[in-house]
Image (cartoon, rainbow, N blue to C red; front, side, top):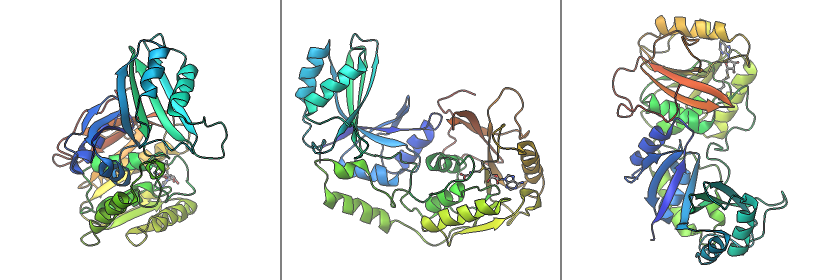
Length: 378
Ligand SMILES: C[S@@+](CC[C@H](N)C(=O)[O-])C[C@H]1O[C@@H](n2cnc3c(N)ncnc32)[C@H](O)[C@@H]1O
């Protein structure tokens, strides 16, 4: 099978976790760079990455990289590309163009050239989901990539209605992996909302492919190979585990949130592994001597009563949960954070347009190989 240059797009601040995850999936070439992780793989790998990566946002296939001095040379080089295996000419194409430090600054014109060179029609209507093609021109160096994913990878398909300020599924998985969660530790999310942490934990614990409920853009590629796809799914299914999984607890003060969490867990097929309950976190007793507590409490001005919630979390972590590892999301700001506990590691990222930090403490040794160094600053 031919090999291709691939790019796994990551949430800013998490590329080191995506890199570690992809290496763990057997992609030795995975190497983080700005905005994501570069790696090499064949068709089987493209399908596998989409099905299996919990932390990446999208998998791009680099179709070509070349120099072009102007629009004419761009057109000629694009026309010469072998689009055959990738583009399906019966499906409209949506070009995504970014131009920097080049005379070819008219992204609309570059998009038109792309359409005519590829022989596809533009995506003018909302009737059909288009094929997404990315062209980046920087210093006259042109990179052409096709999206193999379609809807962002965080859209697993188990969360239909979301509660307040839900965390994206791939970010929740990145937080859990950064904490060293592997399914052997008791997990507790005391403000679970729609249950994202709990479901992602169950998917990790059982090694269930996070993409098993959805479809991908590569299924519409001209050269899509259903036999290879079946093999990828079969191998992944054979690696699912059902034993030796520590309890996963998800609670929330809001009964509607708990109903949502239960629904997410059931839709994901993880309903039997996740115990849900209505409970004010101030009343929570530790369900075991040690474990991992993960929380995305209400933060900032968006959700009321947030200071009180952080106070409860602080007393839990200093009290009955003192032997636990923990990871808590809070709003990133200068000076002392809302939680008021000193952390040992952190992840910094943007979510819903807000700068957030995932503080981790009580870590008791090297997690994810002692990973540090996300790609954004506090
Ligand atoms: C930001 S949301 C959590 C979102 C969740 N991570 C998700 O992905 O859907 C915060 C949650 O904290 C819950 N909450 C607020 N105060 C609480 C308390 N005292 N005890 C337990 N849960 C609380 C809210 O009901 C809300 O569902």
